Image (tube, rainbow, N blue to C red; front, top):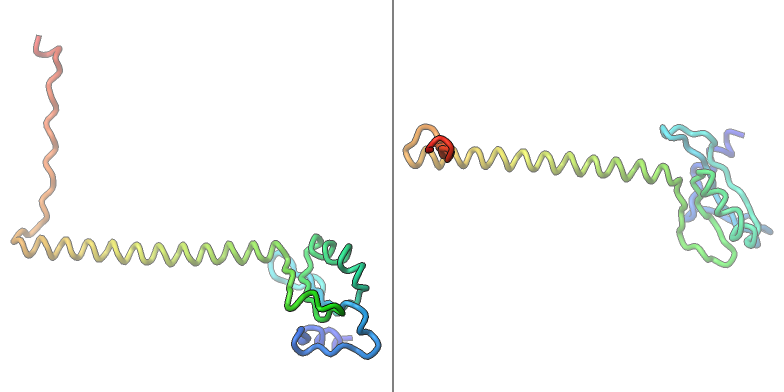
Length: 147
């Protein structure tokens, strides 16, 4: 059995050979991963009738959280379709957003440091040792005090 599981892991649409006499079935590879990325169900190859696959199996596998790779379809409806687990796609998108946020924050910090450096150079060029701070504005006296 381990050889079948290992071979199912290595099989992809590009290298899959349809067994003789099974050309009328849809051949798919399914696997189920947990939220933490651990394998819940190892990859295996499943055959379905095209009509059943189109109407029931494809939608049910998606709903149940399976990763589905269509290895062979007799009518060749799917060129290289891979239906991913929606939670896995969401996790990957969140990770990409976090990466982009971190890169943006790093770029922002770099620009702020450059601005501070340029302000210091400008102040030095003007002959000031420290940049001048704005004086606080005096408050206007209230009308009640005048009366």
